[in-house]
Image (cartoon, rainbow, N blue to C red):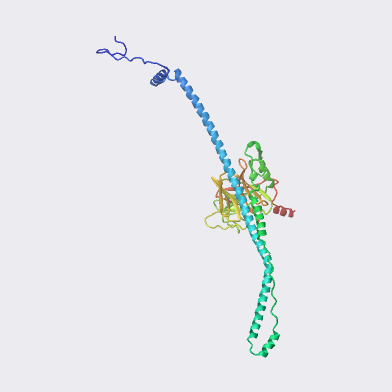
Length: 435
């Protein structure tokens, strides 16, 4: 017989020679090829178990990296949200400062013009007197000159001599003018000082207070005592401070749109598909309702629970138009006599005088409104799951303000009440007068 791997004569067969393994790398290559040709042997082989262990280790590492990446992504998103909130808050504060500065500048511009006009009148008063005296002096000189001219044209000597004797002496010289006093530098100096004080409005500390963002800073859950408008929410120190000026409000049925249904003693309003009766005189044709209470001075706070998005909270002067104009179903913040915050599905929009500012959306349905008339601030808060400042308006409020609301069909708003909350000053005086 021939040796393996050699070819014989007729009828002989090929015999494969065993592979020549010269090193560790050739051994690994041989094992891989052998296992690839015989998969069933892989799991039972020592190299297979080692490779599986390596893969499991790599999988565990990748899973740990994925967990870390998710945590980093959440941290990044949280930082982005904090920056967005801080930016919106800062923009609101700066916008308010510029708004107050512009209003103050306009008032001071009018005042400065009046001061300049008064100073001008005072400075020109001597000139007016001397101007009248000079006009009289010129008229006297003109009359004297005319009489002399007539006398010179007289041809009769006797008449000439008679009239010459009657001719009076010419007017005395007028004399030096009184110097006018006008100090332009003094006017500009006062104005510069005033503008410097006004520009200080931009630098004064006026940023809204920050709110706690961590659970350990919060006190336990507190339940609002009114069963018709329960408030189950975490209460932070800022909210407890706001509660010091809490007002129990009610909707005014005479102002409600005829599709609105009021219940719970005026604390709740629902926008129904069908009309709830004929429209009352003076009620809103728009999908709006206002409160029976108004505020003209002091510091006031109230809370509202909305059933869903597509609602607007705001305040307005009594002259807010109630007729529907065009296709809009609301006018809160569309003019100069109202301010409003519209809670939309994906965003929040602040409205005043037809100008809007879009802000990040909120999922909370419990909202707070803080009105500080002395400081000229109207601030809106989201109260769930924690207190979050949404927007602050800065204005010089000059007339009584009524809380006013807009709500889409199917929506419900509830004015949350607290036991022991103080009545607004006007209502409190009226209540005391009854006893």
